[in-house]
Image (cartoon, helix red, strand yellow):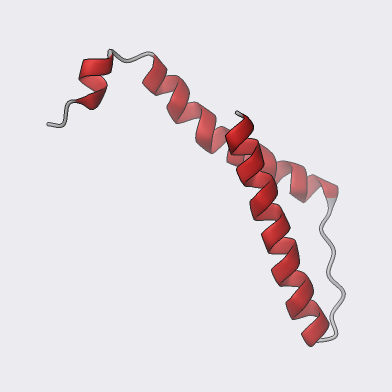
Length: 67
């Protein structure tokens, strides 16, 4: 869970940096709302946690077998 949240924070920081650079170059005002930031971090956590939860319920040999 820590890795997925950290990934979300890194992605959010990178996006804010890119938007800031482009916004300054085009004389636009950029904003990142708290709701969007929390949604991004929640989505990132969900993308990482849901498959991990499903995989944790599988038998290790079945999970590693490729059909």
